[in-house]
Image 1 (cartoon, rainbow, N blue to C red):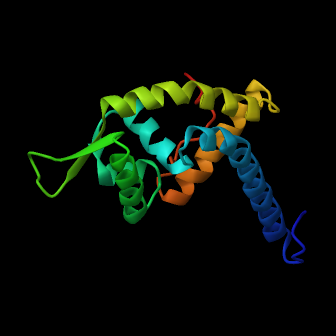
Image 2: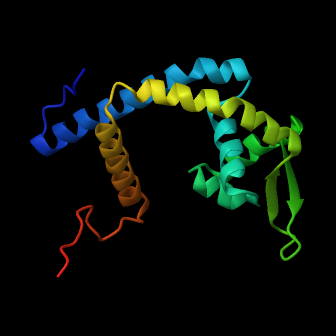
Length: 163
């Protein structure tokens, strides 16, 4: 359902786009939820395990920043994963105030087991879009995210002419 707001075209177009973005995101999350529930994990827990698996150990603050989570949310998620034996926290030797978070052997086995099925479900959910459309959506989402986080590049997506 589009917005019923009768303001300026710029605002109604932005609101319509925002509504579509939220509904699409909710639809993808809903589609993925059953697989995560079956695995006994939340989206946030999966994101932490995946980040540690692909990027390696990192401090808890950096982990929260990478996942766009608040410090309190990151702490709560890491607490749960630590209780399950999937991650371990250690104080960094160079700064005892900082906790380093790493996958345990059990956590690594778990994420390696569940992630391939999750990746297939994501691919299935996005298969309504062709390859070029998925790449375009990815570029647009990245552009929006970077602009709103204040990290927008001043460079265009278009290649610069050589000469």
